[in-house]
Length: 596
Image 1: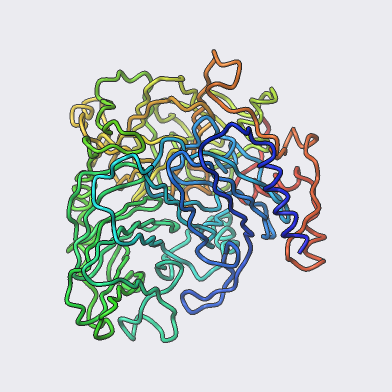
Image 2: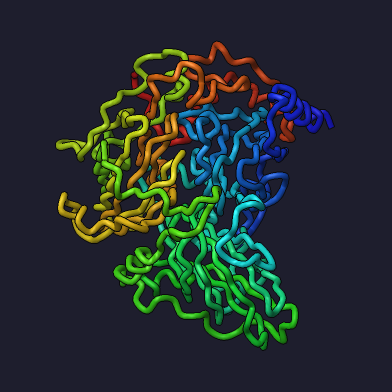
């Protein structure tokens, strides 16, 4: 009871401290993030739930709303929540990654407060450290248009969120140990759809007793279906048997409306489709998410299968699954499909003016970085992942917090514009972005597997992708008109992808591999964007009153008494200082603690 009271007080304090003149609505959420026992693939394991649910609740809000999420960390390890695709305008303090935030110690509360300024679309949140997303803890974020802004399609009859992702029967702590010992995670045990295992479409591949997802619909209706790949590292092909999917939006941008019978959804990506229930309902229909770019014979069981059930359905789904793209290794098909996703230039989004009124091709590039990834390498006896030959290790003191308090030596502003020559190394080198500059990022994937890369704080324009090595001449192939704006881009093995981003959001922002193993092993960097003329918090909000302190600033942290639902002995063990918690978090992040 007192735990609920403490949570309520934490929220009330935020309300009391808020300016009374604010006019945009507020949405309040109270989350208890803890372990839940589940067996999505038939093997009991520890998953991360929110308020006892896996997946977690959907945050359903509208443009410019303020979001207040009071989080109780009921895990036995530190926690951060990040908000994939939410830009946190002027407010990287809420981003929920180790470069900007100290982690929430076990048993502590912390309240996120941010505004979804000038955004619409489909996003998701997840725990950002220590491979925790591989155990769950994720949920959807739906940002609806304001009523005064036209949407480029009719109002759907329903709105459905679908999470797809590869899944391991091992707990995330065991997966960390595998990576720490220099091993690959290997082939996943299956694919989940909304946290559930596959429908038993094949008795030899799917054991009896697996709980599967059923999506209930009515005939003759049109539904908006939002699909998020929240998995660890596997690209998935998504399809609905017998139904066309009209792509209308991805990660906050309306797209040109095209029909797809299937679409590759890469790790960390989000799409929304319009699906019309226009079939005869002779039986239920398969909803499938199957692995891509893999040996189909070996990976055959790595498929998520749900059922779409009409209210007048006359039987269970049966027979073979709908076919995936013909050749699993036909990367050209997948890349051409990716290139077909274009920006809807005539539609408005969060504002009434058309998306296409921002003509990115007319802006001069002021900074350009070629970010090359390779297969994991050995650095100082440890298996690590790199960008440009550097493997990032999160500092004990978060970068943005160090800046705010004048702590020197935490990082260096010398990240190389091109790959380093010589042996790869550990480091905390970050990119010095120019405020109001226009940056070109080229992701060169010299690994043998798919990667996808995400940038916090921004939507970037995807202007090009191709196989081979990027060269200066590659710019001649860029899409100069309707490259879609999004926050996560796929990069095919042996290929490159180029994006352009307008650096108008002050803060320290994470650029990372969305593949959890690569991220854990150091494949990330930060972009620091500072307005040197701002002395009054006009372009960046002040550090929040409830900021957590760790590392060299731990002396400023006021202690909380842990108040989770764990047993007495576990709770007593969780009573540690924030500096100890931060050091533990670095270990969870796969970091090697190095001298500044």
